[in-house]
Image 1 (cartoon, rainbow, N blue to C red):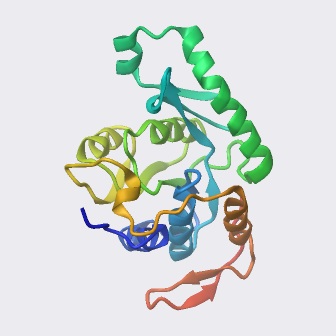
Image 2: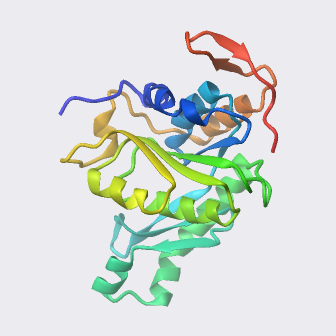
Amino acid sequence: MAPVFPDRRAGGRALAEKLGHLAGEDTVVLGLPRGGLPVADEIARALGAPLDIVLVRKIGMPLNPELALGAIAGPEGGTLVLNDEMVSAYGIDADTIEAQAAPSRAELARRSALWGTRLTPGALKGKRVILVDDGIATGATMRAAIAAVRADRPARVIVATPVAPPDTIAAMAALADEVVCLATPAFFTAVGLHYASFPQLDDDEVRRILAGAERPDRPAKDGNGAGHSRPPPQR
């Protein structure tokens, strides 16, 4: 299978072309860590919108952490979204769920302290919020992100991703006000296989992207690809 996108930023630029109708001061772009942040950065630049990160992390199944039991979101992991089918099929009780969630809660707390987030409670109220990831497999983390953002009463929630399987996109469409996905391969295995370059992002890169988004002279691309400065984001 040939890669669809050269890298995450190329995927973000391609997505931005489909999201031009959302440009404006009432739009906020939120990347899912870590891989969604470079994609979101390109979208935020193109739309002239503020960029931030939504803290979310998958909860793995007992003995099979790669299989999603659910996900948590928020600096303290206060939003929990479970895969009800998995919980029912395997008879997973509340204590087991909490045991599986505990390491993810600790990691979210670490990331919150290290990366920071400039979004204060109520900052998304009435806004158009674009949630961005580099790809969506099962949709567990995106569902948690949607639930966390909805609690802030935004005007609209838009899910944007370069690639995801058709059934996942259908599930997202039932939760978000709009879904934009560029590629929906019927045979979907791993997100990274759809990129020619798919390196892991470290904490320093996350902090660098977020710090760059705060620069008053941050360049935003116009329709010809040229750069121009835009006002600092208001949060």
